[in-house]
Length: 73
Image (cartoon, rainbow, N blue to C red; front, side):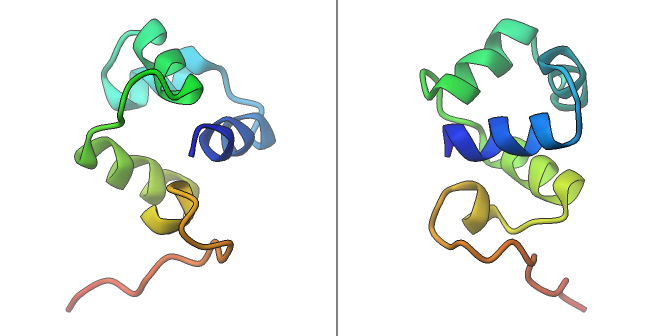
C-alpha cells in the first residue's frame, strides 16, 4: 500500500502537504502512511480512493485493477 499511495501522489505532481491537507492530518502523519509506519484510517482510505478514482482494494494492493467499484444506489 505504501508504494501505491506514493506513486499515485507523485503521478499527479502533488506534495505530501497537499494530501495531508485533504485528509486533515499533519504532513508527518501522511508521510508515515506512505512509509507504512501508520495504518491509514478507513475514512481516509475512502477519501483517497475517491480522490484518485481508484478502489480501496487497489490502494491496499489487493488488486491491480484501478477501476473503482460502482456506487450503491
